[in-house]
Length: 199
Image (cartoon, rainbow, N blue to C red; front, side, top):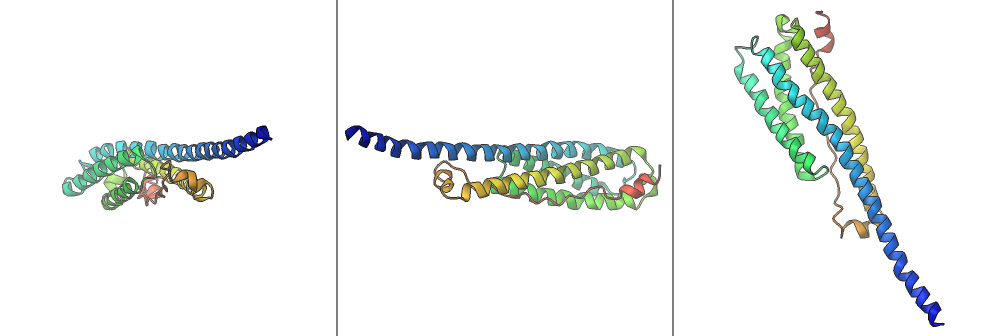
């Protein structure tokens, strides 16, 4: 009788502990998937940030009358790069993610202005190096868009997982906070077809 009671008590104690461990591990896996998905965005953004100064160096010759546009792009690129570093440090955290979206919006606006100036000049569009850098920016924007979709899918999976009962009982005390979706509108050096037509 006593051994049966002890066995039942042991089971009643062990089962909830095992359930908590399993839930915790599942949440850790989902959070790590989210971080891994963001790392793909981080790599593509960094590559894009590295391309921009090279493109601007090529454009300096052509855009001597628009130094403020070039300077605005560099400032926006530096702000976006710093915002990405903060976001990469804690993917899903609302503050850094919103900061990245705001900085990327400023960069998008300044790049759009720059690409408009490029489109207005046949001489610039004929420059092979400029075309290569703009094509590279397009490629990175496409990679970022795909990586963003994978990241947002991972965020939704993580958030749904942490909101379910009994997962919520483990998520809150152990600091599994809701992750934030990333909504980036990228410029892309869109005049891809016209640029290639000048080959």
